Image (cartoon, rainbow, N blue to C red; front, top):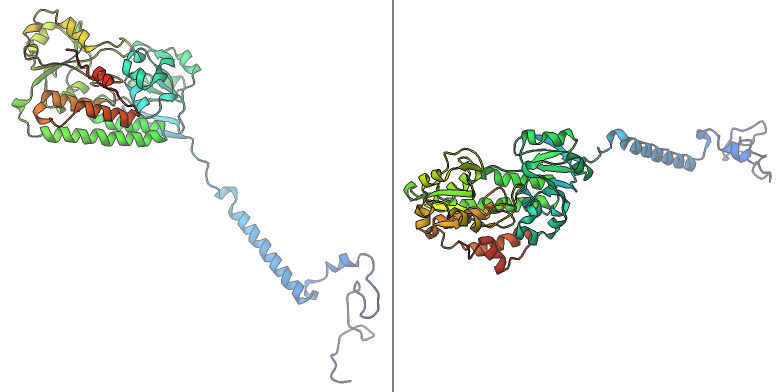
Length: 409
């Protein structure tokens, strides 16, 4: 016959089918296990559709395996860091936790920076006498509950400190001051500034150490103090040397204690357009004789509000003036005769030394020394704005009188 397809088949001419499949028209089913054996037929013998399904399945499997290899542990992202290295104001490098929750504060003035940057609630230990400053207690009442572990000179009972498990110790200075803490396994960072140019960088260092919102607040403060510094300097840039009054800043009495050349006090006196009569004295908190003060005979005397540090409870600047007034020769001083004895403001800490309120100090001192050049600077208004902006505290008129020591002389 012609026109019919021919088949290669068995001896009977029937098409060759696998033994486990029924012969067409026979009505027989496969033998037991025949379905299983069908799975192992040569692929070439499978129907075209089955071979296409198999190819797609193999391709998907290969792709999945490739994706799995691509995300192997060798290519995985490294774990997020938990520490950082910071450099102290004095140059030492220290590894600290990225997340700082517990702060031990050795330096009295730096307690104010801690509070300003929103880290007050993280303090676990503070210096002696910080809580004796009235305005600090009002702005941050939590200070009353903190242990005063650091005594005069920054001395501390290390065993008691270790029990508090601080993440970082803020030290009063660098060098040997940091050694006991590092030897005890406590990360220590010196964030204290000694000169005015170090002020803004030291605050930003503290922001980096504490992290979170402290970084932004530190930047805001740096912008503020730099702007106020530029304003003061621009107005005094052409001031003749002969128009700069001589100034002596008295830290306490008795005895007469002053700060010498290259100190922070010497720095802001010069920024504010004065000459420092004590610039020939070297160091901070240096005792001089009353005879030396009479020899200097300055145009202006600025009296610090003493205390609030480890060695002395807070007092009023008026108490210092009252004691000085009893000294022979006091009434003969030029500054006394001209009624140019000024009481330095004190807020959370004396404005004149080592805290963020130094930004207010340069404005106050410039207006005291050169009132005609700063008639538009309203110290009360600036003070109110400063504490609202950086401490979220609204000052009352009574607060301002206390800070600026109105009514005292």
